Structure formats: C-alpha cells, structure tokens
Amino acid sequence: MAFDLPALPYSRDGLAPHISEDTLNFHYGKHHNAYVTNLNKLTEGTDLDGASLEEVIQTAAGDPAKAGLFNNAAQVWNHTFYWHSMKPGGGGRPTGRISELIDRDFGSYEDFSEAFKTAGGTQFGSGWAWLVLKDGKLEIRKTPNAETPLTEAGTTPLLTMDVWEHAYYLDYQNARPTYMASFLDNLVNWDFANQNLADAA
Ligand code: MN
Figure 1 (cartoon, helix red, strand yellow):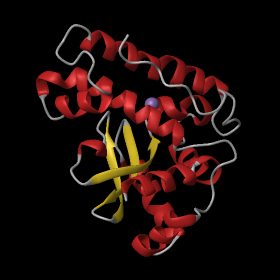
Figure 2 (spheres, protein in one colour):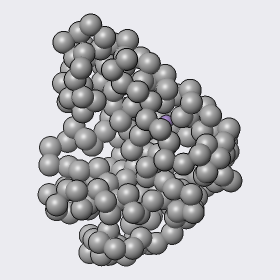
Figure 3 (spheres, helix red, strand yellow):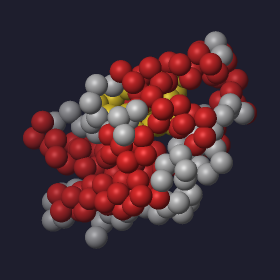
C-alpha cells in the first residue's frame, strides 16, 4: 500500500484525561485509519499511484471532480499534523520564537488564545482551527471539513486543532469551548510550532 497510517507520537492514553484513550481509539484508530484506507483505494492504479501525500493534495485541491480524493488525502495530512500539535504534559504559554511572534502579531498570548478559540468556535459544523505563518506574519485560520491552509499560497501551517465533533464528543459531549480551552491549557505542543516555524525560515 502506498500510504500508511503514521504512528502516533505518544501512546493512545498519553493525552488522558484531557483526551481519552477511547477517543484516540476511534479518532486515530478508526477515523484517521479510514482516510488512509480510502486514499489508497482512490490512488491505486491511477497516475497518482506513488505520488507523495502533499502532491495528491495539491493535485486534487479545488477540483470538484476530485473532491473525494482531496477530502481523504487532506484528512490524512490534517490528522497527522493535529496529533503532533499536542503532547502529553503540553499546554500553557508558548516559549521561544513562537512566543515572541505571538506577542508581536496578536498583542499578547491572551489575545491569541481568544482569537484561536473564536475561530474554532465559529467554524460552523466540522472543520479545523489553525495557526499559520503567512508572508512572515502569524495568522489564524478556520477551515471547513477537510480544507487545509497547506493549499494556500505562501502559507505554512504551524499548529492545528480539530473541531469535528468526533474529536471531542466522547470526552466533552457538545461542549466544544471546554475542549478548546483544554487543548490550549493542557495539550498544545509549542515545540512543534517552533519547529515548523524554524523549518519555514
Ligand atoms: Mn478528526
């Protein structure tokens, strides 16, 4: 098979109690895995057989005839990026370069936190909230369904938060704001954001 389900960067109970092992069994073990399986079915024997995940996403983006391909490929990428956007014992205020840029571009960590949670909270239905680097400046994005800033010119994703109901319903039921607060307070991996920032330079 061309595409594999990437390993989680921690054990399935590593984010508990903020995100339970039960959630990761479904979210990673079922949902993420299904996107990989579907992507393999959709690319096997086509001219995209052997292409990289990023190539498939860029090829299918914006083409209504390739919506299924885009959705599965982008969801594989988005979820892998999301798992790395969290870590056991994460959360709280950023450090390093990302901290300096947050103060510079949002005013303060508190202002960033409010804007990030507002993006996630106002994404109607399923989607994602993102911290991105756009032309050297930090910005926040919200995207519906499988849409990803990876396809936006001059834009580097630094961090993402899944706000599909499957990300939080088992642990928080309908309380998306509580899940988002816990993501920032207990889970977010600023080392990953700093690494993405350094790689973008
Ligand atoms: Mn998800």
